[in-house]
Structure formats: C-alpha cells, structure tokens
Length: 453
Ligand code: COA
Image (tube, rainbow, N blue to C red):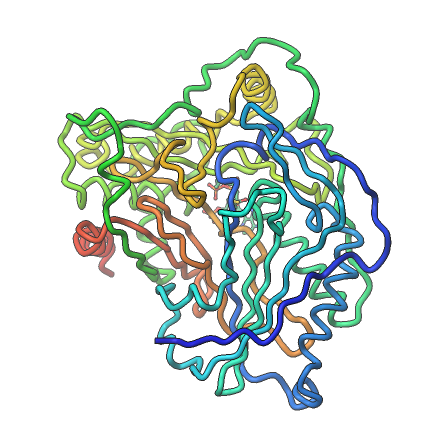
C-alpha cells in the first residue's frame, strides 16, 4: 500500500490582477462530464540543481503557475449554479490548489503504471461535497518518492476546458517554468458557441444523442448496472496489431467521405465488438457508443487557434450487438464514422439551439462524481471511447526533464475507454478500458484473439 503524506497545500493565484467578472459558458461546458479529469506525469529523479535547496521544484511550480494563470485566468475562477442545471464561471482569481506530498514508495512499486487504486493517493482528491462555487477548477499534486522520482498529477474541470485546452494550458505553464516566454495566449472569446445568447432557430436535426442510451434488454433502468464493480486494463497494441485492425476494418465497402477508416474508427469498432461479445449480449440488444468529437475544425469558420474552453460535442453511434458482432469489423467502423460525420457547423448550431431550448440541463450532465446516478450512463450495454491520439500530451518538461511515463488517472466507470499513443515503439497504442470486473477477462481474450500477429 502506498502511503503519501501531505507536506504543504498552496492556493496559487494569478501573479497580476486579472479581469474580474462573469464568463458565460457555452452549452458544451454545461453538459456531459462536468467534473474533473485526472492525468499523471511520472519523472525520474531530477538533476541535483533541482534538489538543493529542497524546495526549488515546488517554488518553481508555484511561481510559473501563478504567471500562467494571468493568461489563463478563467481556470483560477469558480463555477456556480444558476438554476435549470446551468452554470456560469466567476472569474474571481480565487486560485488553484497545489499540493506537495511525500511518499516512502518508490516508482518501481507502481509496476507497469496501470492505473490502480493506489493512484488515488497521487491525485488530488476533489471533495464534491463542498459547494461547486468553492471548488478549485484545477488541483495539482507534486509527490516525491523515496527513490528520488516524482509525479505531478493534475485534475481539471471538464466544464471549463477540454483535452485540447487542458494541454495548451499545461504546456504553456511548463514553458514559463523553463524560463521561456509564453508561446500562444489562449483565445478567450467563446462567441462561436453563442454563450449566453438566446436560441436563434428551432433545431434542424434530431438530437437523440442527448437522450439516455439504451438499457439492457429486459431492464427498465440502469440502476443495477451502475452498481457493478469495475476494473481497469491498459491494453497495449503494437504497430503491427494496429495495422492489422485497420486493414481488417477496411476490407469491405467504405462509407461516408470514402477515405480509409482511421485507426480510431477501426480500433473503436474493435473495442465495441469485443465488449458486445464479452458482455454476452442478446442478438437484439441495442447498444450505443459515445464519441467525443472536437468541433474546432468542423465549425465554419473554424474556431480561432488555441480557442479556450470546451469544444467537444458527444455524438452516438448506435447498433444492435448481434449485428456489430456478426458483421465484419468495417460495419462497426461505418456506424462510428456516420456518427462523427454528422458533426458539421450546421449540426453543431442545431445542437446548441436544442440545448438552449431545454428548461433544465441536469439530465444531460454526467454527475456521478457528485454521487448522482442520473444523467447518461455509458456502461453495459454501451461504451464511450475517447481519442487522445492527436493530443500532444507527452514531453511535459518543467525544467527538470521530460516525464518518462504519462497516464490518465483512474477512469473507473463501466464502459469508459480511452485510446492513447503508446510509450515505446512508434505507432504503438494503448487502449485504457474500464469494464465491469465480470467482463474484463473475456474482453481481453476477444480483444487480442482477433489481432494475433
Ligand atoms: N497527428 C497524427 N495524425 C493526424 C493528426 C495528428 N495531429 N491529425 C490528423 N492526422 C491524420 C492521421 O492520418 C489520422 O489517421 P490514422 O489515425 O488512421 O493514421 C487521421 O488524420 C485522423 O484524423 P481525425 O480527424 O483525428 O479522425 P479520427 O478518426 O482519428 O478521430 C475523432 C475522430 C472524432 C475522435 C477526432 O476527429 C476528434 O475529434 N478527436 C477529439 C480528440 C479530443 O479532443 N479528445 C479529448 C476529449 S476531451
């Protein structure tokens, strides 16, 4: 068991006065996952100059973070509920929480760094029992291990930033810590998503993607499935295995824009098939697969570079398990592509109008971390597969060198999957999967049996 003791806790505020006022949020900021998303970076022992005097690392982190927050000041603010399940962001410079901790554990105690319950001691705990208006939007924990190695974990509110913005912020923070000037400032103008505006038109598309995904056949709710114990696996894929899945997906007819199915479309299809098999669904079991689509380049005009916020729209690929499993892999990939290709400028605007017309957004929010079992559930018989393939998440250097390992924190909800670039071989991948314990072994078997090289 990893024991971690807290050495210090700091509320880091912007180094200079920042704009003070209410930032209206876009519809995307107020639906889906509005809780925090964790990541951890592990570093080998930093060079000697970082260790003497012993507080150089924490001082550098605090100083550079406070300077980064001058540019990214919304992150230093607080959310507040304004009724109807809606949120706004008070840019009040309350600051972000940075914790310093120590542990007798060694980096080698974490084995192959598969997220385990031990990780919870390395990731700042977000106390969702306190009112949201008191919660830091970013919490950071520096942990020093007895072997000299360190970890830096960050957990950041998905209501305020998505993966692209989170990585932009972290990499600019690291740049300032290295003594370099800010690279590209964030674009804090969220007009593209019509934040705070009334609806313009009635929605032009069907937005059943915001409805509850299907239940298991014979059940009228997901209450029982939500209670099941889950487990996480990090499934490595060599470049050859990735190529094999991609080739398999592209064996038949290709739909939509016509270009070959991408690694994401192919591997996500493969995950979907493996999950349907492992969960032993009936042939007629309806199943939904949630895809996080970055709308930045799909808007007309595309969003400005380094747009700050949450530009992710979740869309749903649907099917029946029997078909997903019995038809060739390309069928599952085609369902996924169809869903992704709905996301055009027109569609995004229609979805905005749809949400603006809703009297209450609560039913579209995933608040499980707040103890709620309302909101969409992408566990059995459904899945959600996010791509981190194109996020520049590696190589985070605060001055003492780049991490040797980076991993998402615990994504411990049934059906929650992530596809990440691999750590070693170029072109390799890691699929982080969380499933019910009873399904995991079968899932791994199906996942690998089709891609034996
Ligand atoms: N690096 C490498 N290849 C890139 C690239 C990049 N930055 N950008 C585009 N490509 C090329 C590659 O050839 C790739 O095909 P391959 O994976 O088969 O080699 C293809 O373009 C990928 O194009 P993309 O448009 O990203 O499609 P996709 O099918 O891989 O992914 C989505 C579909 C919907 C997942 C993706 O468009 C998206 O929106 N991702 C959002 C990611 C995100 O923000 N995640 C965090 C959520 S908080």
